[in-house]
Image (cartoon, rainbow, N blue to C red; front, side, top):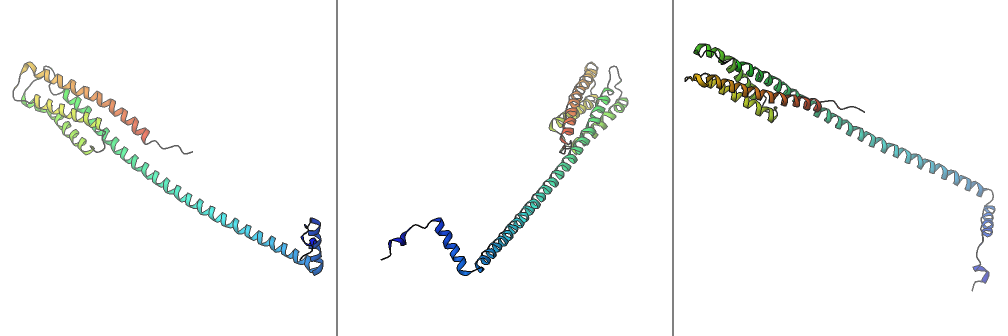
Length: 221
């Protein structure tokens, strides 16, 4: 059976004496061993820290590269989208300009087909109808050419203008001539065409403003 003093609590002073005794028992080499162990520990710690820093910098560089690549692809896609949008807007604007030009010409030529007091001589009448008929055919061709690019409201107005042009051509060149309403028909058709041109002018102006806003370059911060 162990003596009672074997279970005594070891104090801090006891711990110091034990360590000191252990160092003295191995002589001065014990101090050297402890110093070398501390030095090796510092070297290992520094190397581990340096490796961790390098790994962290490498990971951050890879993330930055991936982010830059993603931003570059996004910028290229946005530039392509803007190019396509501008090109489509240019086509639409060209179509609107061409159709507007001939729609206004239709109004001018309709006024010259059968003004009040004009003769209904067949040869003279056909000469007056011809410019309106040519304008009608050209406008009809243009609306068909630019149909996929024209806004629905503008296309609807142009369709009505060409319908009124056909009506004026058919009525003015009709074989049966009724002096009482022949000039009245012309006045009515001209007024209807002019009214459509007024509506078309407002629609074209509004669309031009929209296209300018749509294709305005975005401000770079």
